[in-house]
Amino acid sequence: MSPRPTRLRRVSNPPVISGFRPYGGVAKEGQAQSVFLHLEEYEVIRLCDYENFNHHEAARVMDVSRPTLTRIYAKARAKIADALVTGKQIIIEGGKVYFDSEWYKCNGCNCLFNQPEKSVMPEKCPLCGSSEVVNYVPVDESTPVTHRAPSDICFCPACGYEKEHEPSQRCKDEICPVCNSRLMRKNNLLLKDI
Image 1 (cartoon, rainbow, N blue to C red):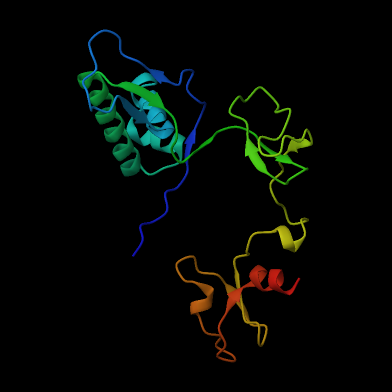
Image 2 (image 1 turned 90 degrees about the vertical axis):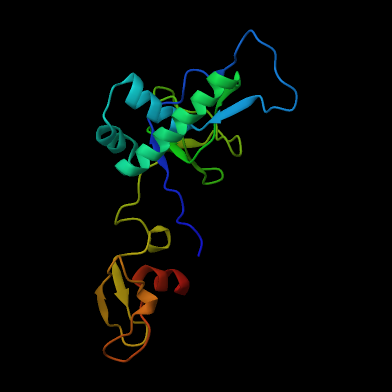
């Protein structure tokens, strides 16, 4: 069984620097010279040690559970300790994060992206370079069905029976009580028909 996918962690702003480099001392042969601190690990250190948030408050800010935040925090402190004791440089990059900022859409390639600098409107799309960038507006009910996410209704394609979707149960695993056919998410059916 494969592990659960990692949920994206919210980061308020990117770090002002991309890392630290030690000075003095001599590097040992064959030893890795860098420690990679992920952006979510940087954010946990910033919230807990710099902003003095407790783990519960920091978890809410980052949109993760408190146990997850504690694991990220422990991993970040271990990496920083390794870098300090062994004289390795720290590089801050990577991780499964999104920045807490406005989202933009490129009308040229339909790419959705966000801008880490909250006060700056992007001039061009980072994917295709087009200057047709607009603020992204989340989907509402007036958006055509082909662009909507699946609804919270399970639907029988054979007889039209509908019921509210239960988050813990996949629609395709449920049987229609009227005609014994398999149910589907309502919008999934509509997307296939178009």
